[in-house]
Length: 634
Image (cartoon, one colour):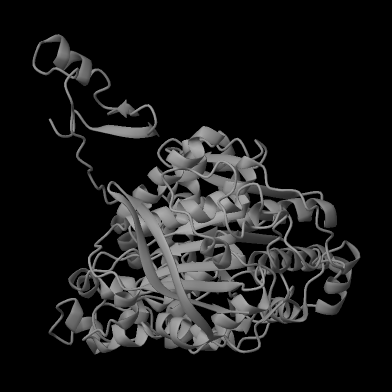
């Protein structure tokens, strides 16, 4: 009955309290039949238990079997111990392959030179308006000159733009030499894939003239068509019943004719290979680009690696300082790099030297300097160092502004936290009791957001145009309601409980002003969901104050990468609310203690100005003053 009554959720309307779902394809009438025969009554409340279906392990097993046991495979004693192999039996040896070389001979591939006429290709791209900065051109050249290259792209440094130029460079080279080329652009999610693929396809149409050129974006048959994807690019893939278009694409790639550009997630790449009972390892692609490689673990990366052709090139781009792939269990000790992100796999196990992007187009210099404390190279600099938020009307200095909500505590100190000339600021206070939600911080977020709405200009001050280098003229007009939540402000918090509390308070305050609940929900999220996004103003709410709760969650709460993601979302202003208990916490685990250094450095030395500050919030019995310290950096 579990299988027969299984459903697939397709939409949730939280405001109306509705969930839309589809019944099991094999038993489409089962729910109606059960009710018709009086066996169940679905007019009563029903509990939906989530069921996890593993669709990946079989794909990985098939791919590993297809790669086999080549001569260059390494016999790691830690691996044998971790998987329970106590004997020294190695197994039957199989022939080598390009995929095997990626897994076991990465250093050799990274030192293998590919000859291309890069000066002429660069000149052609520049003639078509494709401009890169010096570090991006360096990464571009390295990616087109080696069979294996990694690119370290810190936040806001134009990693996607660089990868688009790399793909375009490889295609221009093939056209000039009149040779076929098969390019795979791969990422862990469709959103990450589209960041590179869509503009690459547009650029190809503007730069390249070729009589036999095809670009496709492969989509799972279980995923609805995206209205933002052109029909000419969208290709639905059902491996059990492949369309004629899918069969023609496979035939085209197998015959290696013309120029083919394929965008796919890792598992859809496997499906393309195995359609029609094909092997999980086939030499389908001459040039493979892996984006967001820091979020893709090695096991998922193996699927597209198995599609590499002889003498093929692989470019792996990511940022090891961002959040790693999510695993349900810790890696065996000593094997972290082998099962972690594919970027770290090549960096640590194969010592592949990355090309580093060095110019941040997102944030001002103060926020970039905080990134230096996280571990980014000191060569990382801001393209618009004096970027500041534009407050088009002054903040109130004494009395509350017109329309100030009665449910929010008033103090002119809220305006101090929003001072544009202090790009990084925080409020630290003793608390000692909050676990996963914190009413004071939720109210603080609502108060700051209310002051910003209608005042926050839609164009940051002192922003330089990436193409001309000139300063973009500010409009001195405020964000519209939609743009305020989508571009102006973002609220990041570690816990969903605090997220829900902040959303509820913002909906109470901004609902009367016409803000939709969904707009607000999308602007408040956990660190994991905010990775890859940016806002002019980021407000971070740590929430926790109870020492036992902090101790229980210190590995999660104190993560250097998590705090780095949180802070690097901000363009012009970063505001952090954190209890003294979180800052003072010393973990008993050495690695957690090491990870916590970024938060401690941020509060204790990076924010190098400090003074006492009193804020507050409204409780049922009246206003409560919260005393702490305001710290900031100019």
